[in-house]
Length: 158
Image 1 (cartoon, rainbow, N blue to C red):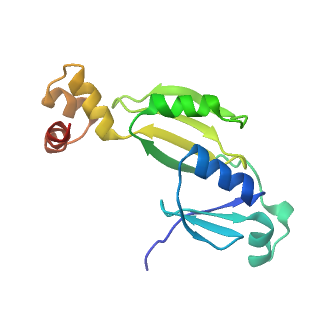
Image 2: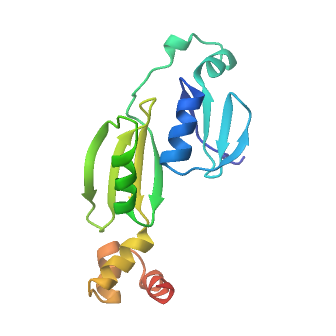
Protein backbone atom coordinates (compact mmCIF):
# COMPACT_ATOMS: atom_id res chain seq x y z
CA UNK A 1 0.00 0.00 0.00
CA UNK A 2 1.21 3.49 -0.84
CA UNK A 3 -0.14 6.75 0.59
CA UNK A 4 -0.99 9.14 -2.26
CA UNK A 5 -2.12 12.52 -0.95
CA UNK A 6 -4.31 14.43 1.51
CA UNK A 7 -7.61 15.78 0.21
CA UNK A 8 -9.35 18.73 1.79
CA UNK A 9 -12.99 19.61 1.25
CA UNK A 10 -13.86 23.14 0.07
CA UNK A 11 -17.12 25.06 -0.27
CA UNK A 12 -16.20 26.95 -3.43
CA UNK A 13 -13.64 25.38 -5.76
CA UNK A 14 -12.93 28.71 -7.50
CA UNK A 15 -12.26 30.62 -4.29
CA UNK A 16 -10.00 27.83 -3.04
CA UNK A 17 -8.17 27.54 -6.33
CA UNK A 18 -7.53 31.26 -6.35
CA UNK A 19 -6.19 31.08 -2.79
CA UNK A 20 -3.90 28.09 -3.33
CA UNK A 21 -2.69 29.15 -6.76
CA UNK A 22 -2.27 32.89 -6.18
CA UNK A 23 -1.39 33.14 -2.49
CA UNK A 24 0.48 29.87 -1.97
CA UNK A 25 1.80 29.60 -5.55
CA UNK A 26 0.62 26.03 -6.05
CA UNK A 27 0.63 24.60 -9.57
CA UNK A 28 -2.20 22.40 -10.82
CA UNK A 29 -1.18 18.85 -11.61
CA UNK A 30 -4.67 17.59 -12.57
CA UNK A 31 -7.95 19.45 -12.87
CA UNK A 32 -11.06 17.30 -12.71
CA UNK A 33 -13.45 20.20 -12.15
CA UNK A 34 -14.81 19.18 -8.75
CA UNK A 35 -11.38 17.91 -7.70
CA UNK A 36 -8.04 19.61 -8.28
CA UNK A 37 -4.70 18.00 -7.49
CA UNK A 38 -1.63 20.17 -7.05
CA UNK A 39 1.99 19.38 -7.84
CA UNK A 40 2.65 19.35 -4.09
CA UNK A 41 0.46 16.24 -4.03
CA UNK A 42 -2.55 17.47 -2.13
CA UNK A 43 -6.06 17.89 -3.50
CA UNK A 44 -9.04 20.11 -2.99
CA UNK A 45 -12.50 18.74 -3.62
CA UNK A 46 -15.86 20.46 -3.81
CA UNK A 47 -17.89 19.83 -0.65
CA UNK A 48 -21.10 18.84 -2.47
CA UNK A 49 -19.22 16.30 -4.58
CA UNK A 50 -17.39 14.86 -1.59
CA UNK A 51 -20.62 14.52 0.41
CA UNK A 52 -22.26 12.60 -2.45
CA UNK A 53 -19.26 10.29 -2.81
CA UNK A 54 -19.27 9.28 0.83
CA UNK A 55 -23.08 9.44 1.04
CA UNK A 56 -23.47 11.95 3.86
CA UNK A 57 -25.25 15.24 4.27
CA UNK A 58 -23.05 18.28 3.48
CA UNK A 59 -23.99 19.75 6.86
CA UNK A 60 -22.23 16.85 8.55
CA UNK A 61 -18.89 18.05 7.17
CA UNK A 62 -17.50 20.31 9.86
CA UNK A 63 -15.51 23.47 9.39
CA UNK A 64 -12.48 24.57 11.43
CA UNK A 65 -11.75 21.28 13.21
CA UNK A 66 -8.21 22.45 14.13
CA UNK A 67 -6.86 18.92 13.90
CA UNK A 68 -4.95 18.97 10.61
CA UNK A 69 -2.73 21.38 8.72
CA UNK A 70 -1.17 21.70 5.32
CA UNK A 71 2.51 22.62 5.64
CA UNK A 72 4.37 24.67 3.04
CA UNK A 73 7.93 25.98 2.92
CA UNK A 74 9.36 29.11 1.33
CA UNK A 75 12.91 30.29 0.85
CA UNK A 76 12.12 33.83 2.00
CA UNK A 77 9.43 34.08 4.66
CA UNK A 78 9.62 37.87 4.74
CA UNK A 79 8.64 38.06 1.05
CA UNK A 80 5.77 35.66 1.72
CA UNK A 81 4.52 37.81 4.60
CA UNK A 82 4.37 40.77 2.21
CA UNK A 83 2.27 38.63 -0.15
CA UNK A 84 -0.15 37.95 2.70
CA UNK A 85 -0.34 41.65 3.54
CA UNK A 86 -1.23 42.52 -0.08
CA UNK A 87 -3.88 39.83 -0.55
CA UNK A 88 -7.53 40.64 -1.06
CA UNK A 89 -8.45 37.82 1.33
CA UNK A 90 -9.20 38.54 4.93
CA UNK A 91 -6.73 36.14 6.49
CA UNK A 92 -7.51 34.82 9.96
CA UNK A 93 -4.16 34.26 11.62
CA UNK A 94 -3.66 31.59 14.24
CA UNK A 95 -0.46 33.30 15.34
CA UNK A 96 2.00 35.87 14.10
CA UNK A 97 5.42 34.95 12.79
CA UNK A 98 7.19 32.90 15.46
CA UNK A 99 10.64 31.36 15.63
CA UNK A 100 10.96 27.79 16.90
CA UNK A 101 13.84 26.74 19.13
CA UNK A 102 15.63 25.24 16.09
CA UNK A 103 15.51 28.65 14.38
CA UNK A 104 12.81 28.09 11.78
CA UNK A 105 10.36 30.97 11.45
CA UNK A 106 6.73 30.01 10.72
CA UNK A 107 3.27 31.50 10.53
CA UNK A 108 -0.10 29.75 10.72
CA UNK A 109 -3.44 30.92 9.41
CA UNK A 110 -6.68 29.56 7.96
CA UNK A 111 -7.52 29.08 4.31
CA UNK A 112 -10.99 30.21 3.06
CA UNK A 113 -12.51 26.93 4.35
CA UNK A 114 -10.83 27.17 7.77
CA UNK A 115 -8.16 24.53 7.18
CA UNK A 116 -4.93 25.33 9.02
CA UNK A 117 -2.08 26.43 6.78
CA UNK A 118 1.47 26.57 8.09
CA UNK A 119 4.15 28.32 6.07
CA UNK A 120 7.70 28.07 7.29
CA UNK A 121 11.06 29.01 5.92
CA UNK A 122 12.95 26.04 4.54
CA UNK A 123 15.54 24.58 6.88
CA UNK A 124 18.14 25.32 4.20
CA UNK A 125 17.22 29.00 4.51
CA UNK A 126 17.50 28.77 8.29
CA UNK A 127 20.97 27.23 8.01
CA UNK A 128 22.12 29.89 5.55
CA UNK A 129 20.71 32.65 7.79
CA UNK A 130 22.64 31.34 10.80
CA UNK A 131 25.86 30.93 8.83
CA UNK A 132 25.47 34.48 7.46
CA UNK A 133 24.99 35.73 11.03
CA UNK A 134 28.38 34.27 11.91
CA UNK A 135 27.50 30.97 13.57
CA UNK A 136 29.96 28.18 12.82
CA UNK A 137 28.93 25.01 11.00
CA UNK A 138 28.97 23.15 14.33
CA UNK A 139 26.93 25.84 16.13
CA UNK A 140 24.43 25.91 13.27
CA UNK A 141 24.08 22.12 13.29
CA UNK A 142 23.44 22.16 17.03
CA UNK A 143 20.95 25.03 16.86
CA UNK A 144 18.99 23.63 13.89
CA UNK A 145 19.14 20.04 15.16
CA UNK A 146 20.42 18.90 11.77
CA UNK A 147 23.52 16.85 10.96
CA UNK A 148 26.79 18.68 10.35
CA UNK A 149 26.91 17.11 6.87
CA UNK A 150 23.60 18.75 6.00
CA UNK A 151 24.84 22.15 7.23
CA UNK A 152 28.07 21.79 5.27
CA UNK A 153 26.08 20.95 2.12
CA UNK A 154 23.94 24.07 2.61
CA UNK A 155 27.13 26.10 3.08
CA UNK A 156 28.56 24.71 -0.18
CA UNK A 157 25.35 25.56 -2.04
CA UNK A 158 25.19 29.14 -0.79
